[in-house]
Amino acid sequence: MSNDSENPRGRVRLARGVSPWLAPTAAAAVVTTALVRKSPRWALAAAPLTALTGAMLWFFRDPERVPGEGRIVSPADGVVQSIDPWPDGRTRVAIFMSPLNVHVNRAPAAGTITSVEHVPGGFVPAFNKDSDKNERVVWHFDTELGDIEMVQIAGAVARRIVPYLSAGTKVAQTERVGLIRFGSRVDVYLPEGIEPAVSVGQKTVAGVTRIDHA
Image (cartoon, rainbow, N blue to C red; front, side):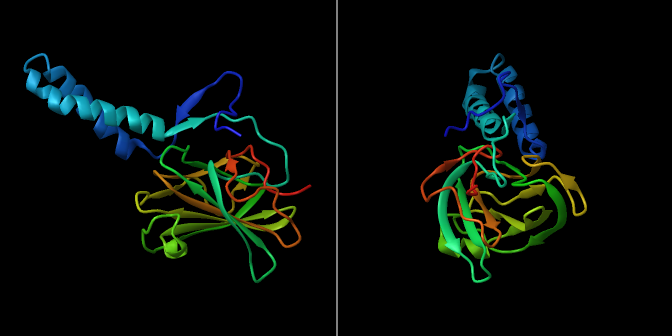
């Protein structure tokens, strides 16, 4: 499934929380481009800054999505990196997000956010097995299926996780809950007794791809 399961209007906006990165870069691109008229030498700065601004606009896009069907949907765009049974009976589905994926994460199911916990840690690449010790934000959702845990994990490049919501907030399935800047990983833990409907290597689309079997 592609990353283009947006609504028919194709409306795309920028993700919340990107201003500290995008605004100064875009401003510098505008200023140096204007200065090229005075001296062509400014092109040496204007060209890369303009390219970087364009890349950041792409990285931080936040397209509208047509919600998928399923009790639990993918919280992230990316590729299923692993599916692991957990000692407590749950199943962890780990989704790797590359720098080219949309970085906005969505609620996997409707319910109430019971906790949002920031856990300090390292910044090894998100595909590394040691990334479980990386800096992360752990979410718990109280849903009709019980507690669903979601973990946003920072990677080697993604060193800033931006939660949009706080504990006590009621969320609709597929609602935007946070942003991870650049590439990273998102894990979702399926409650005991729920089998995954995805496989390792499968592409996922946040808010669209069903990850639980009916």
